[in-house]
Length: 374
Image (cartoon, rainbow, N blue to C red; front, side, top):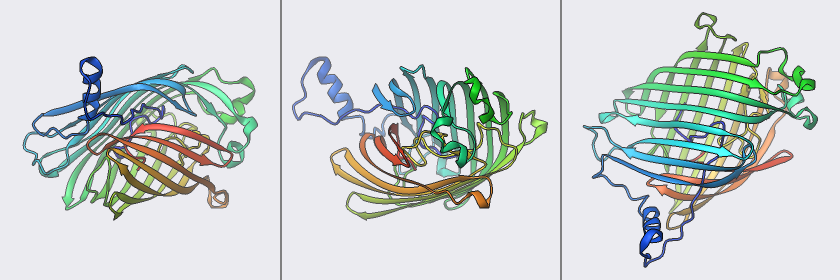
């Protein structure tokens, strides 16, 4: 797990525009403009610097919604001012389709960066869609079925530094899910698995992280290799293990230009449930695809993104990539394309609000969120 973007299931946030006049008007409007004009200035004299942003948004997954997000930066006592600050994001979101989501995510850095804690806790009620398992089922438009999901999820990592940029530590994951209001004629797409389940996982992660900044890297490398176990003796409805590997790299090409690359894979062994299978789509991997439309036991993807600062706090991005979901080597032949463009606005220091539009095979969609996709 890495601290990235807060709306894992809702995939929806809000965006503000950079319209700041040289002579700021007085009154409420003047205070409003001043608030956002100073929101990206790091305030090292403040122990906890938090700013809020809210408003309407739209994504293919959630339709029109209203969200409120607070982004905070802080340093623990004993942390050197030259260290990157710890970050926390709290959010809430509601949409016209009935989505209700609340959550908190962040990374806490300890003095001298000896330890790190990454965490992501969320709850959502989410009317969503489902197409089945495997490319053959998921690629059939007529398999689309609706359902309502009530889910709580918590993920955490505690990392200990072994050497410069090298960390290791335990992982924890817990999920409770209830799905209902399923189309009766599409129940076969769940392959006899339960619609109500809980899941507890324990694991270990090894990370190499030389990024200059976690939330908006301009240079460096991030490698995460993790192994999660969800055995029966933890009262799991479905017993399986998950192996994740993520490799990100960042290079500054010229003034304001950053090239970012990612290769990501997930392999499940045992009997994962339909909800916990590897998937693509959403706000991070294969943007533009409906989150979870394509799912199977395993997943592999790659993407390359060019990020360019344009003017003041604004920037643009373009990306391209490809991905696949599969259950064995014979079914890995179906490769899905992905590309898109995006806009960035620096809400806080090294914390971007982003608007992306992604294109995939026979589908596309908007994504509003905070922090980079990877």
